[in-house]
Image (cartoon, rainbow, N blue to C red):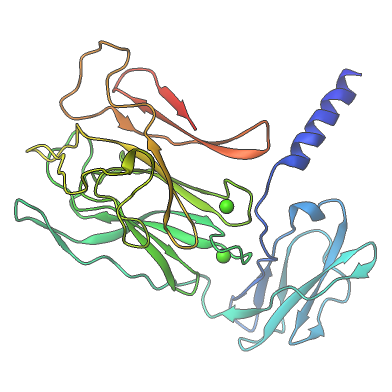
Amino acid sequence: MTISLLTLIASLAFGTRNMEWLDRGLIAVNTGGNKIYLSWRLLAPEMDAVSGFNVYRDGTKITATPVTNSTNYTDAAGSATATYTVRAITAGVEGKDSPSAKVWPHQWLSIPLSPPPDETMKDGSKCTYSANDASAGDLDGDGQYEIILKWDPSNSKDNSQSGYTGDVFLDAYKLNGTRLWRIDLGKNIRAGAHYTQFQVMDYDGDGKAELIVKTAPGTKDGAGNFLATGPAAGADNTADYRSGSGYVLTGPEWLTLFDGTTGKELNTVNYNPPRGTYPPGAMPTATGSTASWPTPLGWTACTRPRSSSAATTRGSPWRPGTW
Ligand SMILES: [Ca+2]
Ligand SMILES: [Ca+2]
């Protein structure tokens, strides 16, 4: 009885969890000597239904028997100019062609990027930009992942290091290099590994992923507009909360949900946990090492994902916050 009940609960929970609706994800990679390596996805709803896959080159089936023990196949007599598809077999019936794949010339995919221009600090120093952390999500609901990329200035700093930093930017790219949007977090979000974690997930289950990240006065969304909802409404976006040593220890801290397709602000709330020390009354640090660190993602009741955050004063326990 106990096992049955637990099984039922697990089954219901899995069935109600919203998932990404990705396409077959077929890729074809030239590994040399006319050998073309193919790889594709088995989708979650297919787990118990699909028995195998047939592989097609230029419309002709090349698998004598279906691929049943993996989701990859090497075409030993392939061609760099071929176009491939796969078809899933369900209950003995072959389905439709997957989206087609042309052959990558290398064993990697090169995505053209658009770095932000160099920036001059108010002390006269300059910074350049390098591609930094990235995440993936289907921002526009077409079944393919996009890349969400953080640009890190060359003067980004650890909490232990003083000094001004350049703005932090977040870009979204299609896999062909088309840039969907750019978010500028502004001068009141310091650049460094401890300051900007971001989450990409379809929070409302409409098939398109959103972005959540910490923001502040001066942040501009993907449409180039200052934030304007919740505590951001009427904020002074010209305010400069940086100390003389480049730290941001005062001023509002927000958390903003951005539309994944446009980068536009959807909703802004106050950041939780707020600035301060922990445990209450502990000695404050001069470097702002009470930082927003990990921002885990979880499912409450296994239905919709929820965002959460945590902060710590160095050497102290985590303080969680959940939205
Ligand atoms: Ca997409
Ligand atoms: Ca969504």
